[in-house]
Amino acid sequence: MTPLREPAVLVLEDGRCFRGESFGAVGQTVGEAVFSTGMTGYQETLTDPSYHRQVVVMTAPHVGNTGVNDEDDESRRIWVAGFVVRDPALRPSSWRSRRTLEQELADQGVVGICGIDTRALTRHLRERGAMRVGVFSGDLAGRPVAELVERVQAAPQMSGAALAAEVTTTEPYVVPAVGEKRFTVAALDLGIKAMTPALMAQQGIEVHVLPCTATFEQVRAVGEHGPDGVFFSNGPGDPSAAEHEIEVLREVLAARIPFFGICFGNQLLGRALGFGTYKLKYGHRGINQPVLDRATGRVEVTAHNHGFAVDAPLDGAVHAPSDAAGDTAYGRVRVSHLCLNDDVVEGLECLDIPAYSVQYHPEAAAGPHDAAYLFDRFLSLMETRSASVTAAAKETRA
Image 1 (tube, rainbow, N blue to C red):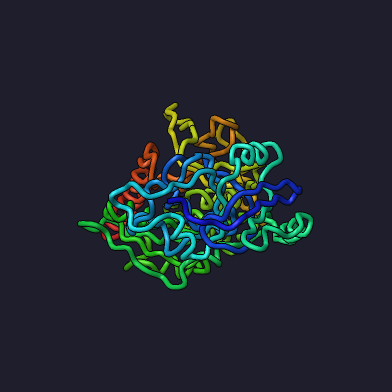
Image 2: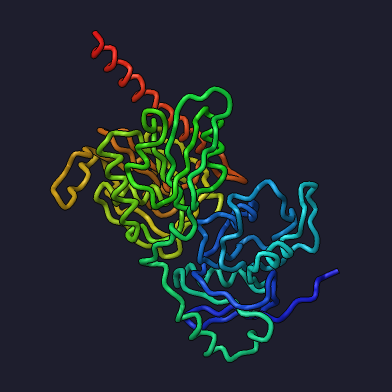
């Protein structure tokens, strides 16, 4: 039986509106309208902290048929500001399901809308760019559109937003290595997904997850003799506003500690090296984005969720731009990966210090897994550093 739903309306900041029915909680929500092209993995999308303050439009027309389970959450809660689907499933059909998607949204207070033309909405966002949006249901759906547009336009912009502190862990915690412990990594939680430290742990890495407010001294205090590597996670917001995190990363680079960053971490590496970042017209979100690994010529199908990108030269290796003090100690850097849809920078590799990053998600759940090898590269950097430290210690004793 189709559930009884309240009337609902989606209103964009440019005045365009779509009328449908409530899906999840009834009320109002505002945020940045973005669309995700994934046909699966909506539970991971909903619980990805990178979607904080964003209203996610699913381009797949039928959503919810696998329900919600207790194993696939990427964090402690749903983070999306709102959820937009065309045709919600009447009932779950997966043996792993414990609850319906609609019930989970309602229980967590997430306002959504269904029964609208998500194809038309997606085309509008592609043409006009990501913009603020509001979803209003129940009695609010009957308010004058002009009044609702004013509410949407009063919402904060994503540009300039520093959001990592709103999603990060409040206390440090440790994800123990699976089997024999090989290395210790300090991971800065900018909006980390649970799958990331889990995959590192499977490689024998003990992961110390720290709040985004951690200082370099706190990062360096991880492990018996300091961390073997440092990791910066994905997360929401404008990278230009993450001044504290960028300064910590510069100290990590100066100390020559092996570094790996994904998504937001890639953007912060770019800024730490002296490159700029900019907001994309409508971003990359979904699990089917083609990326070229320029070193191997291999094309990977990858998972994305980002609205900002690094502004770095695409051709050849260049010296990292000087910082305010004229420091060029970071040496050469090159763009290692490239999006084949629009030539957006998808990865950076430092050639003179042990640091690299990618814009996409090698820990992707529910897939794809073409980029899982990037965790092996992190291991290689730490192995090389460990061998150098051991060799130096032998020389000192000799």
